[in-house]
Structures are given as C-alpha cells and as structure tokens.
Amino acid sequence: MPFLRQSGVRRAEPTSHAQPIGKMRQLRAGVPRLKELSDAARIAENRGLLSYFESEQPMLEIQFSSSSDLRLDLRPALPLVLRGAA
Image (tube, rainbow, N blue to C red; front, side):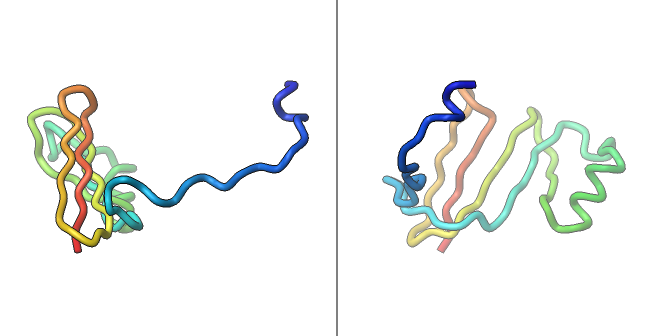
C-alpha cells in the first residue's frame, strides 16, 4: 500500500480539546437486559474494565477527568454520552 511507504515526519495526535476533558476515568455500557450479560461481559466487568447498567436502548457512557462537570449527550445520532467530572 503506497501510503505505508510515504516518508516524512509524522505529527503527534492533538491532545488539547475544545472541551476541558482529560484522561478516561470510567466506561459504562447501558444494556436492555442486564441479567442476560454473557460470561465474557461479566469477566470484563469483574476485572474493572467497564461496568454495566440497565438502559432501554444500548448505549455507551465515557467519563473523563475534567476541570468542570460537563455532559455531552450525542443521542440519538450516536448512542454515546461523554461526561466530565472534576
């Protein structure tokens, strides 16, 4: 693939954002039937990778460290909620 052979200096991805967010602190997944989680999902939860909560529709909630409390709900376009917590 030609793009893999391009020479040049790669720039680092930007780390400053318009929203005052920092590192990811928590990942939560909303599921319609919490009691029906798979064994793999339970293992991921038990290892602290994410937690689950009951939700009418599947969704993902990501919490970031932030200098202020903020909430960015991207539903219905995306099943995603971004939260900032001081």
